[in-house]
Length: 73
Image (spheres, rainbow, N blue to C red):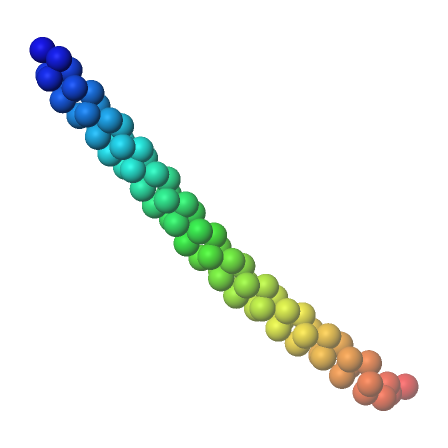
């Protein structure tokens, strides 16, 4: 009976180790997924920001060109 308890105790320790490893693995996978999602959001927002900047630059250039043309009376 003592031998059985020692075996069960070792099995419990092994299960605890496996559970800890599995839990840490899941946390790491979730963290990696979160990082990938954040990188995708950053990329999307960067593209959107660059598009807005280009549009603003075009508007500023058009406005500048219009202001530089001599006005006819």
